[in-house]
Length: 265
Image 1 (cartoon, rainbow, N blue to C red):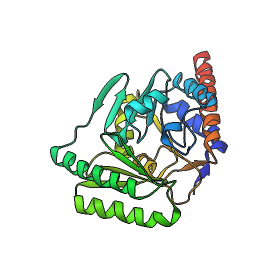
Image 2 (cartoon, rainbow, N blue to C red):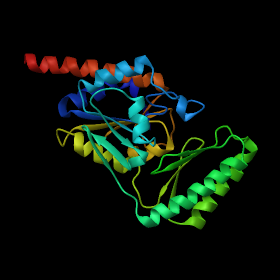
Image 3 (cartoon, rainbow, N blue to C red):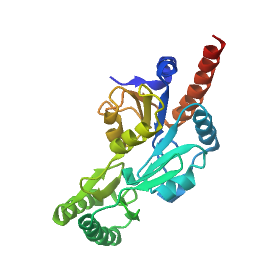
């Protein structure tokens, strides 16, 4: 049963005080509110301040389906590491790496790109986002009566093309080469790179279906979903995105206070 993370801060801080932590965060819906178009997303000053405060205490990373170039332009907080494109791109402690796709995968993605661009032109309100290593087909603004037809077309094209993986999000289809990474594998990779102690507690906060891979990757970690859902693998939930700001701020304050007490001892 999911518990309200806002009511469990003292327990989380107590656990973190003993073992340390790595804080891993989704972007859209977690650090920034969901907006009508991906290009309109931005963090508030409150969120930026909260993120800065927690980076002073713990290693922090943002793990997103956005491209690395996109998310780094939106999160301008020193010391933050990143994973973009669902684990295709990384910027960890200032070092950039990426996972190259095979020739077979590139050909499959090219065919999928052409088909999704035709689908965009066919249905009003559909937006195709080309992130080079992956694609996203947004249908939030498409007519509701068209949603089923769009879904069928996406999955039928993926089956016909082959070597394609579809990860469903909130009114968006994330399109990747089959057999590639996801937010779960990306989160584990970044955790391993940032954890200064093998006992460090992974804290992952996200809101989307794509974040479920990361929730399942850390069954003993502190996993928090923004928006309660009994179907989620997350152990905790927040009521809304504002709760994320409060949690990060309180986590940083409490951890600094705990460090001060330890040093006084």
